Image (cartoon, rainbow, N blue to C red; front, side):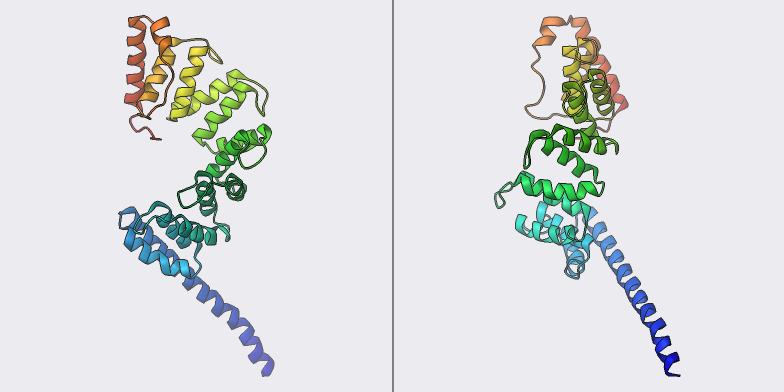
Length: 279
């Protein structure tokens, strides 16, 4: 009889724990869903009130949500220290988006937080190793620039390729630049052009400017000022302050008819791609 009683407890105890865990996970999921709905509706204080008890109880998604509110100053005063505190709690549980945002905070720096590229790289790496394409791109850029770690074009190319394989447009364009320059990969201007064209066609502004520059120089494609002005005009549609190429090549090399043709081609492209991402 004793053995049966103990045996019953051995069976029921893990079952009770499993039920409790399921109920807890369901409550967290429901709370996070309600908080996200409030966030999406711009009801940031309500999102904070819904996320905070879950975050204090250790839910990583809620900790990320609270960190993001402090990071951006939504429903609470902007506070990088508080953002880092909540992001770190989630990041230490393996939450990739928190690791990514921690890296971004340390990379950018704030008035209440000195920039620290080395710490940024550490957090980006954790998220990148989990397959986060934004972190892979950011880590690749740090290796490319030699920020927070020694410059390493091979590793830059590796991480940018991983992000590009997930269709990260900035990574595709930046990888194309490496192929143009032969950095971390064998020089291949044709491949660099193909990557820039792919990202440009998908709406990446930096790629559109890169493509215009390649057509002006004839590096990868044949020199083509009509195509260059077409892509530069498309890039200009993003209205990025202070960005663009010096435009003397237009006056020096193009007839009024060619300028008009380039603008017509740009207008056609923009009409077919009405929703363009903004920087």
